[in-house]
Structure formats: C-alpha cells, structure tokens
Image (tube, rainbow, N blue to C red):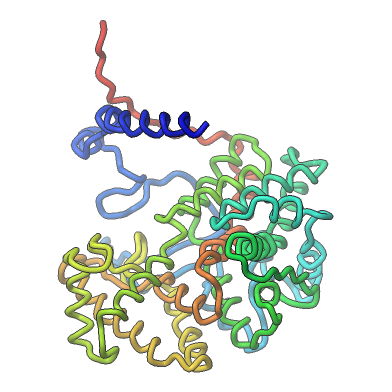
Length: 446
C-alpha cells in the first residue's frame, strides 16, 4: 500500500505540468470576450447575479450623475447595523434578535424574542452519543471539516432531511444555528485532546444563556467569562452574520438551494466555501502579520519605524513577501468598513480590561499608517480603510480563543445569513442557477 501511494504521488507530480499547460486561460482571453474574472469587473464591482431583500452594502453615493466614495454602510432588512448595535443596552445581547430579523424579515416583539430565544435554547442539543460517535471519532485540526462532516451526519437523524418545504427548511436552519457553536467547540476540544494530548472538556450549554455566553462557557475549562467578554463576542457575531449576499459562501448556499437540494447539503457546501483562505481565514493572516511586525518593530509608538517596516511588506521584502498588508482594504467598501467602525470601540474596551493597551496602540498605528501607504504606493483612489478582519483576530486572541476556531466562529455567525438566503431562494427564485461559461477550446481535429 505504501509503494502504491508513492507511485500515485510520483505520477501526479509528473502530470501537474500537463494540467498547467492545458488548463491556463490568459487575461487576454478574458478581456477579449468581456468576461470578468471572479465575477468582478476591473473596478471591483460585482456582476449582478440575483436580487435580495435581506441585506445591502453601500460604499458609494451618486450626486448629479457623479459616483463618489462614501463612508461604508451595512443594512440588515432595512435597518443599519450601527443602529441595531446602538439599540442594545450594555447588558443586552444582539445575536438572537438579529437572527430573528434576518430570518423573518422584521424585528421581533419582546414576546417574539423570548419565544425565538427559547426555540434556540431547546434546539441547542445533539442526538444521543453524537459527540462521542461522530465528533470524537475522527478528530481533526481542521475544525471546519469536522463541522461540515457533523452537519451532513445530522441529516441522518432527521426523518424529513430531504424535504424542501419551507417549514422544514426553517426548522432545520434554526436547529443548525443553535448547534453550530457546539459543533465548533466540541470539535476543537476533541482535536485538542486526541491530537495534542490536552485535557478534554465537554460542557453542556446553559439554556438560560445567550449564544455568545454559551460559546465561552463551553470553550473554557472553568466556564467563567466577564460580561464585557461575552458582549464583545456577541457584537462580533452580529457583524459577521450577513454581508450583502454577494459573498462566495452565500452565493454557494443559493446555488445549491436552487437545485432543490436539502438544507444540510446547502449549509455543508457553504461551509466548504467559507473555509477557503481567500474567504473566511483573513483574520488569521492579520494575526500572523502582526506577530511578524512585533518581531521587527521595537517601539510600538514610533510611527516612522512602523512605516518603514510596512513599506518593506508592501514592497514584497518582508513577512510573506506577497506585498499585502492584511486586514486593510475591501472589495466593496471604499472610505470605511462600517463593521470595523463599530467593532473598534469594543476592541478598545476589551484591551483596557485585559491590560493590553500597548498591543492596541500598535494595531491603531498600523491601521493609520497602512491606510496612507497603500493609497500612495498602489494609487488606490477609491479609498483604503481597515476592514473588520483587522481587529477580529486580535479580539479572539484577547478572549483566549485558539486560532483553529477563528474561521469556525465566523461560520457560527454567518450560518444565519446563509439560512435567510436559503429561505429567500426557495420562496422567490424557483429556477436552478446555471451560470454560462464561454468555451475558448481550440479544435484539434475536423
């Protein structure tokens, strides 16, 4: 068997050049036929592929026929995210009410919120022995793969798993929203125990607590957390729930849903999309970059020293030599990312509680300097600003969340948006999504 594996490895190693030779499609061909790579034009504007009533991103305003960059805005079902966060009291959590808003299209009354929260709590459980027989059976460092396997396996416990009736889809979505944090945390603890020989902790969720509180309770050995810690995590989940519908994993959800596939398959497909480093892993690259900066910058308050090193990064002479300052800029937003504006204040409060003001100062200085440097060196005139990923990794570090859970926590939040888009696709679209590809194949035989 060992020799067989080696022969396959050698075979594909030799054949990869054949694939590269015959699968390359040049930029010139894309330009010749007017096809946009990645469904984005040269200005970064997305090709229109559908309509949605769930959320909206605003990055430009038009006055007298002239389009100008503006401060970024993110709207959920007609409400700005900033207003939704502002309406919460210091002790209130917003995940549950925002999930209701995205799923059902309107804000819940007090009674509706209590009822919905109760439904989430009741659904926050896994089938008998599921943790042992599924999650612990094949522990993996790749928690996203572990979660995806668990989601598909949960279909086996649902007698109506293949139903595409709206009530079944809603039930399945609510149940998955409820259990996602369990799948993430239990998957991590299993890996941490079986692969890293650390202690095993499997804490059951508390029905009286919010999603953010339960996530911290299940993750930490002593189940303890501060009110501010839970609040900041709750805000992070709110801000990552949904993003305009034009992102890769949400589009994947709608494509799979349009085929008539079941909820479990659609969400598993979205998970596979999100785990890609070009989509869900951006904050991990920020953490790695900031660690590199700390190793090369002695004075966190010396802006000249920071600028010199950031210039080296942009010139591909430092860090990963790709010329990118991670967490800066966005495919859609221009002057600012509204999620970053909201999050920054909570990051500051948490850093003070954790006595990490010096680290916070470095983040703020890098953000300020990188914004100007990128605009100058790359001649980006639409505006450059930090995005939400610039701070989210720092927050997870302060919360003691392991790197392996960064993208899974993104999924814990984004499954709400996926669920809303699945329902909207089922109710409104009614046709399979079949994108067109133009063949540029050359005939070799007539």
